[in-house]
Amino acid sequence: MSIRPPWPCTYSAIAEAVPEGGHAVVVVDGAGWHGPAAAQGLDNLTLLKLPPASPELNPVEQLWQPLRQRSLANRCFKHYEGIVQACCEAWNAFTELSGSLRRLCSRQWATLGP
Image 1: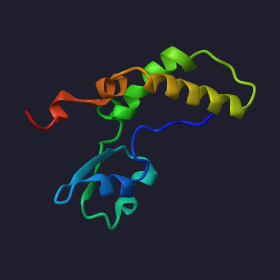
Image 2: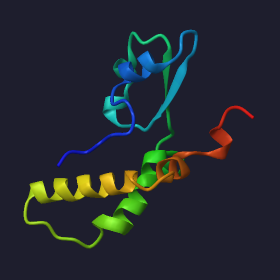
Image 3: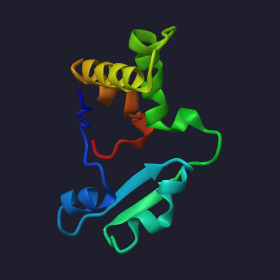
Image 4: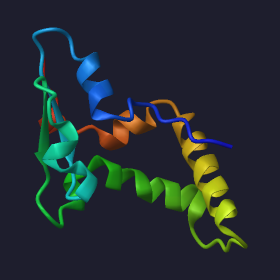
């Protein structure tokens, strides 16, 4: 089983999806692979790094709670493949819940427009 990401998986894919004349701001945590070199050369994309120890500001952190509660808590696995399988199944089931991703990861204060 494989995981189905609901968004482009690279900064270049995000930059390509930005309408001409537009600019994307991607909010990232402090993980090493989110450094400025990752978006180097993408003139229509800016990385905005979150402050350290601020999981309440990181939408991805909001996903872990329902995944743990619904599917991943208090389980033992015989091997690595079982862990990967359980994570893929949990994620795929979660993405089937209409509006869950938007509801958990959206912030009223970060919404642009009317």
